[in-house]
Length: 501
Image (cartoon, rainbow, N blue to C red):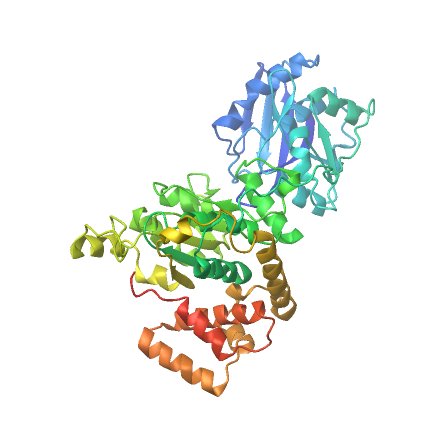
């Protein structure tokens, strides 16, 4: 038979559309052509496949070979099609049986020796493959993440010869199954009780964790802003399975390392302030996820917020509201999920000591204005909690290292509060829509009057009004109370004290 068809999967955002690899052998001068909108790495697979077939003791067909990657209008990139192309050639030349090929899909890059190398995007391919009720054959290094879905059918191999032996029935490969890790999770070495003082900031961090609220710390250098933010993951509950699967899929297409022991932990991303807008939200000629998508269902920490380029910060406004980012290019449009929790830190002025008390500020009013102008009002309006972190006193600095509650104790309260939210509304408070805020954040007549006064005195926008109600709802959940009361509202309003920004 001079024609063979093998199935593979492309990588398009977090999707994995089906690609049909067709190999046709015909008479003529020996050549190999790959069509179907292949990019450079796919075109170069000709040489990898040729060497892998020969070094695996098969015969490379000395005929005119045409490889078609359908659909023709879908861009193909990377070495993920090497295994499928090699098997289509072997099947078309009669060296591998074709009767069972329709039951499998293949992905993996080939070394010149025929060994299989991992490729990104294994988890999305596994999810789509299971829907078609096919088995996915892929490199051993990709098997752990590909086998996460319970309905998946994964066959892992290390060499082209293992795959051909399986298809020929000579030596069947067993289906891969993940086993629960026997080793415990690595202990969290960053604990909130290491932060001296700053009890109001710790309380704000607990509220932010419980409701998934955005948070801004501002204060002088050395007051503990970055230290507090870096300990937020220690009080966050593990992700639910569906959330963890979404995070793992994004990490898979971004070619991030996968660890079964920690795959349920929320991601924590802290890009440097020199990051570009593309690095932050994603993009490129072949769109890839950025930091906000890699922080999906987790934390995005932006330290030294005013040091970021203003245009870079402005691209955060839409995904902060929508929970996803759309990237449009001439030949394709890709949507990446980006429901992240923004934690930011900044100094009050360029020198950092404005309002310090013991150290005089060296900045004039124009320098302070230009410094703060880098953060727009619409971006600040989307940050639910804005709290000052003052410099610690001498007594606090000299106090014992372990002080206050441990992360384990705070995490228990956060878990209880989130369980209340999920039971009541199936989502965390920060994700409530305007209509749901009216339903779940009901105020008494006196508290409505209180919020009306706050709107006038604090110049709260409609967005800030609803975000304050969400924070108050989270405070009530932490207290285990069904209704929002006046103390909850007053604390929520105190956590939006941004007069110095």
